[in-house]
Length: 109
Image (cartoon, helix red, strand yellow):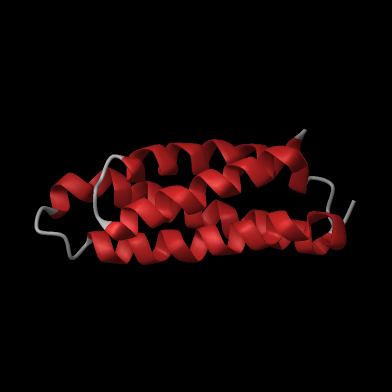
């Protein structure tokens, strides 16, 4: 497997990472930032693992499958947390995370 076979997952990871970064940044401007701390933490963690997974898949490295499994777990956690908040940026982030998790699970299996 390589780039062409993993392209939809790579794109989902990159979209998720950028959406998570935007969400984390937007959460810092919420009235109750302390309430958003877990969301911000998971956004940053999710973005980091998504970028790493996309990079390994782009290189065509077989170990990308293992990272995709971890990425799916973190994306699910982030999507669940973001889904708890009603702001538009959190809802968009939850959608991107859950989509990315589905794509990553296809690679991991």
